[in-house]
Image: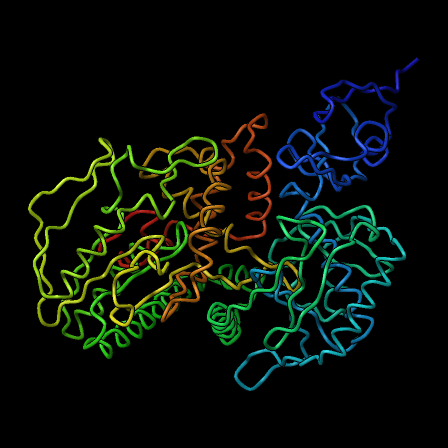
Amino acid sequence: MQDNKITIFCKNDGQRHKIDMGRDLYDLSKEFCNTVKDEKTGEVFPVLAALVDNQLKELSYKPTEYRQVEFVGINNPDGRRTYVRSLCFVLQNAVRKIYPDKVLVIDHSLPSGLYCEIQELGRQEDGRPKPYFATDAELEQIKEEMKSIISRDLPFTKSKMTSEEAEAIFLKNNQPEKAELRKSLGTFSCSVYFLDGNMDTFHGPLLPSTGYLKVFDIVGVGNGFCLQQPSVNDFSKVMPMRRQSKIAATLKEYSDWCSIINIESIGTLNKAILDGKAVDLINLAESLHERNYAKIADMIYEDRGSKRIVMIAGPSSSGKTSSSLRIALQCKVLGLRPKVIELDNYFVDRDRTPKDEDGNYDFESLYAMDLDFLNQQINDLLDGKEVEIPKYDFKTGHRIFEGNKLRLNDKDILIMEGIHALDPEMTHSVDNSKIFRVFASALTSLNIDENNNLSTSDNRILRRMVRDNRTRGITPEETILRWDSVRRGESKHIFPFQENADVLFNSALIYELPMLKYYAEPLLMRIAPNSPAYTESTRLLKFLDYIVALQPSEIAAIPPTSIIREFIGGQML
């Protein structure tokens, strides 16, 4: 007689359990792990999803052989993403019910959640979508409809259908970007989700039902609204609303530009590449960058009489170094003489470096910098004095001097770049009216489809992975495992000050994800299933599966002056 039992190892309780075949993870969680506990805070949370052999699965998944299972809650990044995807489906259903003749677009991330717009069918004369400006009363109606869907505890169900069937439904639902994506991938079938009779696609697992979605809010922003998510620090409350007008304007500007050139999603980007237009896109994107560099140089030139110092900041892999060099080059065109200095040369000696909560050197702390010495040198330069610029020896952990003297003469501009460049405390004793500030970041607003946005963080981690593997021998696994720490540092030291910038430079390039796929996909595929980085690597690989990669001949068309050459090599500045 065949044994219909299988064994699973539950990582949460450290036990092996012999179970009947055919039981799903939801049933198993009720028996072996009804809640998950946060190791740092001691809080307990409902189970939302599970990692099965380090791959994220819905709770409807049924193991058929020996598996390692780890149940996760909203305190886990994958649990949190599962929550947000499910919340987006509820929002989609609410908008469809109230506005059957309009379309919901989930456009990009905000500090407090996701920026969404309700759009009319058709286009404006310049090719941009027609936004529908919902009133506060209408937003409240959407929120109440979402609450109604949540209170009914409706199930999310997953099914398979042919890609052809899915394309037809997407077109009927006024979701041409979804239809174009399916067509560009060329697959015979696809997975779809259903909620209360409505179908959609979400690129990752959903919750068992709507009743889990206890915390959310909707707040009007710009032409649309912000779908607020649970706070990372207190999951019982939504993230506090932070309005960042400069970042929002930059994202909107880029989104409008993408609409005008008819590349609004991965589907339309894939189609352009398959149609042989990759080199045209490369040239167009590079021209946009050059135009924006020139605009920034023009602003610096206009303020040259009062502002002699240019500070450039940005998060990891935003292209700060390349941006500073390109801006410097454009300043030369205008007759200025830029001098570029890296703020990393102003680190304190190693024995004075502050340590983090784990006892490790915290090189991202503002106080890892010798602020007094930096301010003294800047003020001396502004007073017309000559100073000797230091060089920091990272091997010995000491500052050294090699006779690099500098004086700011007429038409000289000092350009300094580093992660703290926009923090007012960095230049606490310098007259702020003499500083021009630039924030650089890869603010992509290109989406997978109408209601699946791309994370700017994902874009940057792929950049960093490719660069660090090429130049420093750092494995993709190491990059992934360090990324959470990098992101925490950015949230603490960089993002709170980005609105201090006089101008923002968006370093995103519309062709870069197809280009990065060519380099990053082989690196990610090297990560073994038993690695702690495997869950994240499979998520990134699944995301890259939706993208058509550039070919080597197309990559060769990227100019040596491009910011992306900082990451893939071949840069000449």
